[in-house]
Image 1 (cartoon, rainbow, N blue to C red):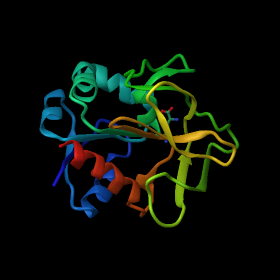
Image 2: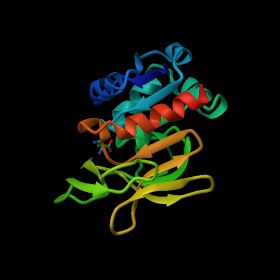
Image 3: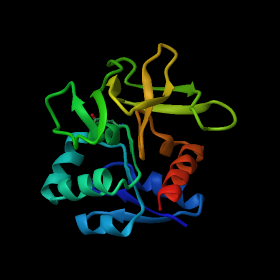
Image 4: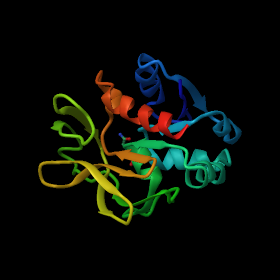
Length: 194
Ligand code: GLN
């Protein structure tokens, strides 16, 4: 079984843990750079992206994260704040993201009145009914670059789930539902890569 790390310095890492364990995955909470060598895949959870990036830099994890993900190709999935952390470029001044995925992202992009909402999404590679997606002060993908494919969009066409090789990012929070299909999909990427 794949060993999956969850970056556990801020945000809703416990919810990811619960769903991954329900699928039988071995989960490690990651708080130190060297722990990244002990896992086959990584989730960067939702939370507050400036805080997550600040802590990544305070704990000196930036270089190791970039090496494991970009050089070793370790499968990595960012949800909400995790998507912001993984972006190449942000429309916002802060934080300085990890520049991993070829996407440009705006934080809190869905406006004040609707900064939280739920909607049904068709997600490529998931079987069965539409996925109930939870958006909480969610980021939007403004631009996708080379190598990135869109695996789910809102009805207005805005991408909300993207993939680039072994990297996935979703604007929404599958960890806040009981639907484990996105986690199962990510585990299949981790197992293929391991
Ligand atoms: N708005 C948050 C940020 O900019 C992300 C929100 C979330 O992860 N639910 O970091």
